[in-house]
Length: 112
Image (cartoon, rainbow, N blue to C red; front, top):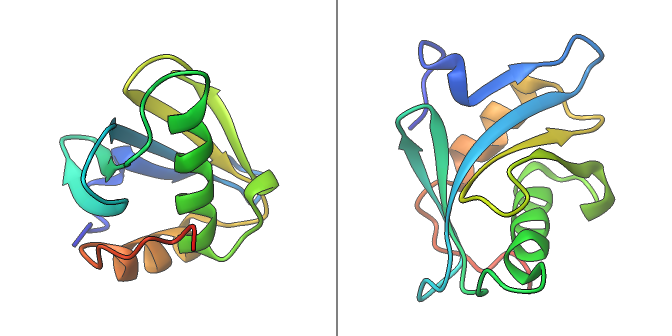
């Protein structure tokens, strides 16, 4: 479970939004939030990394995990890379940390 000490993966932007660093593993057997991998949250996605499918799946999974609409998950960097930074609008880092920690290892497909 992520700890407060490893803050590189999640921080506040000073405006009440969380900045989340993720490492995406596309073409996985299931969608899941796996835990920390270095300074990023490791996320497995079934979607392939083509035509924005993995990015859309990532936004849906993270939005569901933190209880925000998909439109609240804004990519800031790493559009075509496996390591990305996302802004979670309207979701402070403390709340995001709590909800993402609860979602780790569930293996649930949060897209329905």
